Image (cartoon, rainbow, N blue to C red; front, side, top):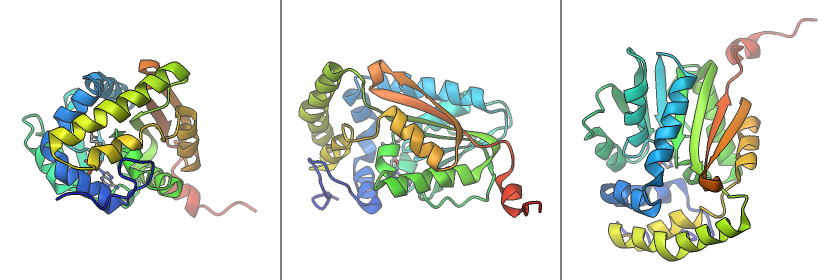
Length: 261
Ligand SMILES: C[S@@+](CC[C@H](N)C(=O)[O-])C[C@H]1O[C@@H](n2cnc3c(N)ncnc32)[C@H](O)[C@@H]1O
């Protein structure tokens, strides 16, 4: 399937969730290769750092990797998780999930087709929620992004953690300019060429310079209900890992407890 209909492809703009799904379902076979080439392999180390940081946040239990794609982060988490942990790996592209399911180390991972904004899980199911390189995709509007983070907050147990890895904005104007030129003139073209998509990677790459910087993303997580939000910049701010914690007090109890007179 070709994505001529992607709004704003190759230029600043926003696509709908269905258009985003069509892009990933089209590029699934070469997604990992292109990602590693576009980031010159840096995404591998960034994902490892996020997996290590996330696994330190939670003990054995039930973990979820949202927008898991081909499952790279879920597999890393599986290797680090204490015995007895199950991992739910969620994505709305069946083609990406099929790639993930082919991984040798996917043994204790359950693959689930669902949308990030409407997760098919009860309140307070997970000890840990992670997401890598998908925040830009679910940012179809600021409201949608806040609602998706609120959904992650809903499915986390009290005291549970959300760890998010995403490209970010460098504080250095010179690095920012070089990085933007690299994405515009090299990375997105390589992505289109290798996957055969006409506009998919131009669209995906066009959202990189427009995305929130690390403090702004932290503020959106707080708006969604998270406490203790902190972040760590990677590679001069080209990416960032955010950690956000849900209040240790149960929100279910809090919302059902009537205020004392
Ligand atoms: C850039 S890939 C990231 C994949 C993986 N997490 C990684 O580390 O490479 C984004 C993934 O998010 C999925 N996705 C995007 N928007 C989504 C949504 N609203 N609900 C569920 N999955 C979504 C896409 O299908 C795609 O597999």
